[in-house]
Length: 95
Length: 432
Image (cartoon, rainbow over all chains, first blue to last red):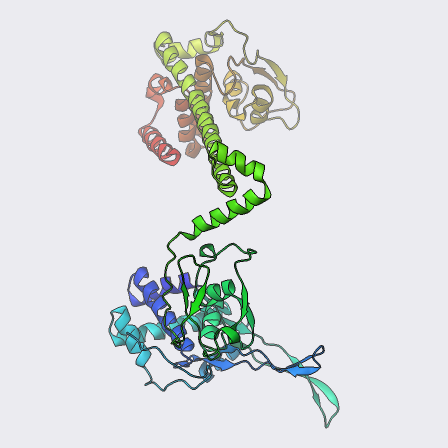
């Protein structure tokens, strides 16, 4: 599924124009990404949680320096699905 | 206006906010009520779920991709039994954020400028101030000097960004000691001289230093710098190719139109001069008079006879002798007495091949009339045996000679005439 399909379906289901659907969708994902930039997590009930976490890559050994080098400081985005979504996915038959 | 967040440590805990706050803000921004926005979000979530279950992937432009990974069976060893077994795993939903979102988050939260790192001014400006590379000096030029960020900005903690000011020449950089607020947009003063001009100047200067003779010639001829000339040549070349293509297409269309118009003119003049008196007279004339050449030039195909062998048919014979399969009713017209069914020829049957005076793409009036007669004979045959095909044969006959409609008006039914009109309109619409 792509954004275009999503916009068309939303416009049909909510009885709004595609332009409005596109605008609302863009606003929604911009708001979510802004929240993530601010370091906050976004919880979408029944779906999952989007949030940020530190880089969990293990330290590496630098042979030239002969010492362990810590991983670069980095923020990663994670998605933790709700149990309901996980169950739905488990029941899905592969096409 | 939203208050910018000042954070001493990049990984400090964010301030707590009421749940649902951002949805309210979103509803206000979108100019809709909260209930609608909640419904909208629910629908979006439902759509993402549907997409995941249906396709296994949901791509959201400028945000990221939700993807279904799995299921992968992994091997596990049961230590008490000392045996390996396959442990089933379940599919997982993962989210891959878009690249710019990852970069933005690492820019605001992560260590944007690692301590002690040596980065170029150009890279810094490009990365953190969002300046386009076109506004900067060209890459590889010695203008982008490297400096130690910790030496130049000792007061600024790691993770915050310095602001830059330019003097008139744009050569020196001065820093402000104020701490930059995360999320704030940094105003960068515009340079007085346009950057492209500076770029051109520098290029010209370097070229002048490298090839003095060429630059002197340019100055003498008052030509633009070399890179401008390249660009101009590129534009001129592409424009010339476009013009040539346009001319080629137009000439092809004009010749096609001339080819289409010329037979029609010939046919109209011939019908006026010949002016057949009636259907009976026309039938009497068809075999003798119309086969004569209207002009003194040699005919395209002089005529002859053909003995049918296995695999022959009228369509194929027309293609062989006339180089156009659609002229087969011309053969059928001359052999209508011996051919009962135009779809069936008998082996060793002798067929007379009528002459063709013009080439298939420029048929003469006599040829067109002969063909119309042939198609009309076919119309008669179809009307008796296959009525559903009869109107099409009539339509083809009228296409070759419209006069045939008036000559044989007594034989035409109202349904066929109505079909003729409708089919002509349909074809015209389809062609348009």
